[in-house]
Image 1 (cartoon, rainbow, N blue to C red):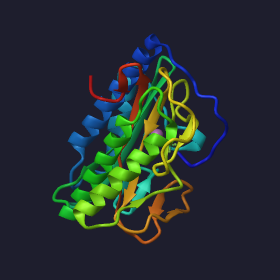
Image 2: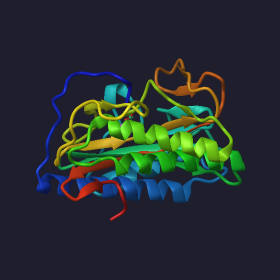
Image 3: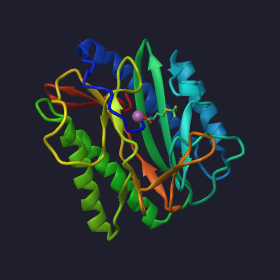
Image 4: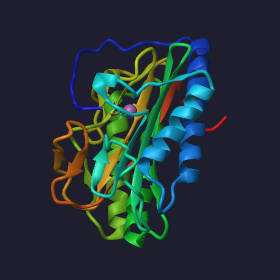
Length: 264
Ligand code: MF3
Ligand code: CO
């Protein structure tokens, strides 16, 4: 979501409510798996969107992106220099070497799940694979900081540190997109708090069992500056460098992070 602070009221879920979120999250995971399986050169992002909508509705859930502030599809499909919120289209046919980020959300019995993966379409360059691996590693570092008693910015910091470590390993300075980040999730897709993907640790709200957060780093191979296209949605890198996006919805529990959007 777009960076903004609206306050510090963070929804707390009971263990039973987190179990309900887990069901919604598993459906999101299954949908992303189906989309990943189908994504290949020659397939359009519009077809992937239709597949996602069928998968979600077939499970008795509703695609949460469709109609959200007028958004016209069930997934976001962001190709190459597109970072997030790319609109799928039948005219956008995937090509060998494309880097495709797919973001998906579903609401089931009032509870939301939200997750994203970056998919290598055909033979993707080693640099692109490294970029995507860096982002996935940063996501998991952030998730590991979703701990009761910790602070929100501990997650942000963990994402930043992991991104920098991956960059050192790869000999690249990865860009961390600043204008967009993670968010609280539960009875709505986007709730307080906004969760930046960088920052010093030890700040922000204290993490308590029952909170749920979407952790979603977005990294670029070059400068992290963004532009929004005239469609009012698609966010691209200003320098045209490639971008990736990985996301899970995660709950804070007494036992540590509980990833809600893993496959069942
Ligand atoms: N997961 C995306 C985010 O947190 C949700 C996209 S909303 C949509 O930004 F309207 F673009 F679908
Ligand atoms: Co999200």
